Length: 287
Image (cartoon, rainbow, N blue to C red; front, side):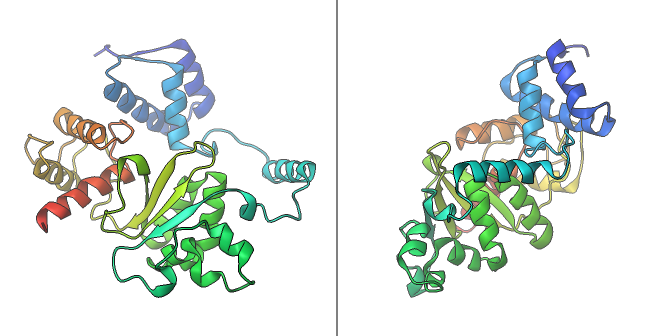
């Protein structure tokens, strides 16, 4: 009703990102409106658009078209310049991981409170595999084949791309949580790691969502929304009808839940939000 304004800089960035493609414009503006609602603002500026774009296309491939050879060429130049082509970069990165298991861990996993690169440096070739925290963590979910991919993703900060790949191929949804806001008692095998860029400690786990939330926007209606409303109602956050309709009451419930759990307040129930909602609901149901 004319209550939302868009700054000129934001308009320019929307066009730069979308090149006029209406599907990309709609996807981008959908995220912008969530951000505006969550922040209580009525003017969308350039920073909001940039944040929405990064969230939708973390690699930038949704917007910009670079020559396919460019990333490899740049990476090669950097590696040559640093003299690292013949070095085990991962082993010297300082990335530290700890695997935690819910119950009855095998003997080889009982003491994984060390950095996996220490195993790689101190053990004989081939001997570190049984004691590798990342390998044992993935093996507990039957995802052994993604061992080297997860190592690279942790090192390079590309977990979102890997999460999509694993979800599409196996149905397992990767969830990342800030370690400071959650303990290890989540009922799932987890991997704790220190992010070298931010210095923060995070938790990784996998779960198979009970609902698939493909669409979530104002006035959208679907059976999966009923399940979300029911879960949030059981936790005391949602007070409205179980009508399967995304409205102000449900959006406010999601925002309140995210704030309570120390999650980024986006107003949109992403993987971490959905996991914590249904994990909390399951704990209440089963004591």
